[in-house]
Image (cartoon, rainbow, N blue to C red; front, side, top):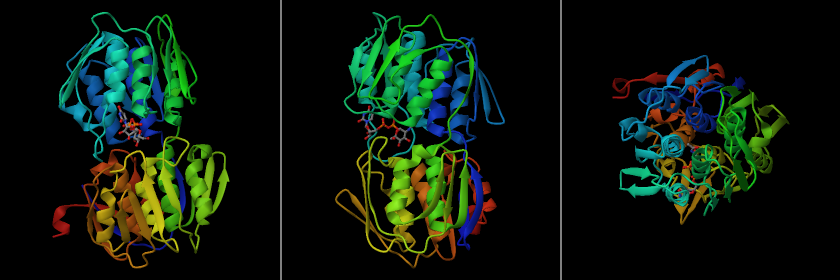
Length: 421
Ligand code: UD1
């Protein structure tokens, strides 16, 4: 999929942020643990969700999706070998490991797909499952697990607060008839939302949002209706777009404290911004100061926003620096930015970004979801016409992005290859 993008005068308007992609992905898989009907509201209309629905259909869950509401009935769920191509399409498919261990005490599954930015191991997930009694047979492509002596509650300390491993180990523990304690867990808002959802289904869990989570036994889960939290990364993305391109941009349906690390950077840069609890307005700023950004686990600056803020830093009066301590190889946007005449380079593990007044349109590529969102911003900033290739990456995680940007006044269309040649 290709976008044709032209540099336009300042963007202006209002956008309502949708439901959180990463929270929704974990919650949708969590819903299959319940032998009752679960109604999930504010589910974003993105390809990752549609890919997940295909997997749910495959394991005989009955699913309907309409008006951002997903209804899941897992009463007829069946054990299936999950070495199917759909698993390779997205990262969050690894949640079927924890969910299947919980439901069936076994799983045969391909390793997950998703964005490719260097190694993305799942050893912390597997070490946790092993401690809980799983016998693991792992190859380069797949993982098979059985629990000959049943899944057991444990006290597990994660070697790093991995978001995926935290959720996967909660999924595996939820139906065990004894108390499980997970330490050094991730504290991201998506974990809190996931646990809140499990509680709405009757789970007995404490400590979400802190470094220790305790999962106590319950009789069974029951159906519920739950509304997914707003997407803090989508919110951060549009805030960055606004800081770079808007005369005035208002974002609604957000939780400002969840983007605090980005707002601190904006304040350091001198961005003109008006912050309310559930709404932020950003105004055009003439002079931006350079900054140093180091990504880290929540509440530090999220790795998911570093590629997107990179083009904004091209406007700052001096050299900025980004260090991604979570995914140091999340750098594929840098070579693409150079094609637009951006003054960017990599020295050791640092991305160095200098003022670039003369960005020029070109043919450039998305190599992953957030890198793609960054390249889209850079194309909007560049003078003249740009063609952005492989934009299916962007549509994995941003609903209605073309529609939203057009409402703000951007010139952006889908086009086909013939138009470029
Ligand atoms: C999730 C998000 C992703 C986000 C990332 C960090 C989903 C579907 N994806 O990814 O958008 O960028 O959190 O906020 O929610 N690690 C290991 N071994 C493991 C697991 C992780 O070494 O078993 C390392 C990773 O390589 C990385 C760090 O831990 O360096 C964080 O990874 P993790 O929090 O697990 O990210 P994901 O769950 O993959």
